[in-house]
Image 1: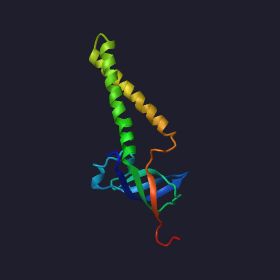
Image 2: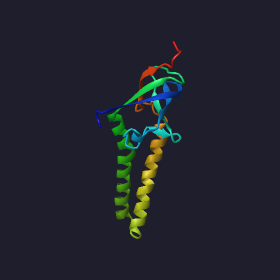
Image 3: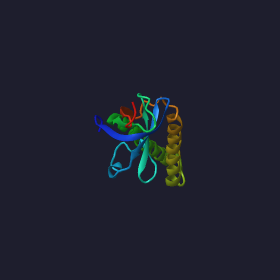
Image 4: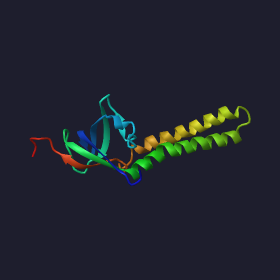
Length: 146
């Protein structure tokens, strides 16, 4: 997975400031895709994806997007692995910290610490320079364009 490179074809919904919102048709392989943490569910037939747009594509352009496996692995570890680790650390610390109702209070501590971590990640990820986003590497203009 680390050296893997996934590609997907879609249509640009809008593009602004070097970031494009791309509509990708939903298929059966979406559930098994390791890059689904980048896609946002739309309706039953489509998903949307934000990607770096070095070509300044326009709405309606067909594009091919690629993402490296190392980026997927990094995002997965950040989202799932560290969250689980914080949860477990909170539980262990809570078991040693509290005297009565250890299980209840340590579980609440672990969940609270995990929630704080995910909130911080959510707030800071909106201020990133988009380095972890997938990238458009090919644009196919619709027929009739120059």
